[in-house]
Picture 1 (tube, rainbow, N blue to C red):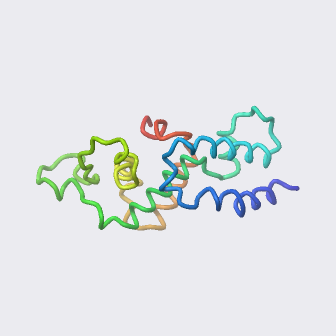
Picture 2: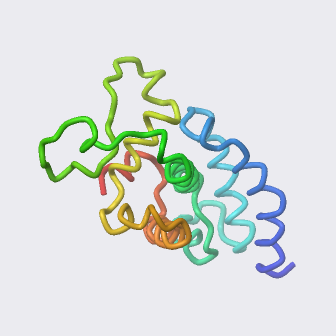
Amino acid sequence: MSPNVLRSMYFSYAHSIMSYGLIFWGNSTDSNDIFKIQKRLIRIITNSNKNAPCRELFKSLNILPLQSQYIYSILLFITKNKDQFSLNSHIHAINTRHKNNLYVPAANLTLYQKRVYYSGIKIFNHLPTTIKNLSSDRNKFQIALKKFLLNNSFYSLEQYFNT
């Protein structure tokens, strides 16, 4: 089969299953197993060696790696439900450079920190300012975010936070 047909099959079967409820399970330890399967599928689509690096293959196929897809999904959730979150400027009146970031509540439990609300805030606050400023226009935000994530192809949240 041609790569285009295989890519269409990937989106119709694997991607639809992978992305279902991703914001809830994308931060779990089991997501690494799913990511390995995703890389195997990418290598099959491109007819690459089983040990070939996949970062450039993801970019060439215009497919987000699992953790980048998790970041994308959670950020779309945050922007869709922005009224559920407070800005730092609403919490205190001090004019700081982070006044337009979402307020991060104090959390000591790792279980709470891995949940959608807390991790979504941390991920949103780490976005480049140019993309963050587009969050009021959903279409422009989605386009800029997807381009940013495709260019960087993050394999983990640590990579995302270290950029």
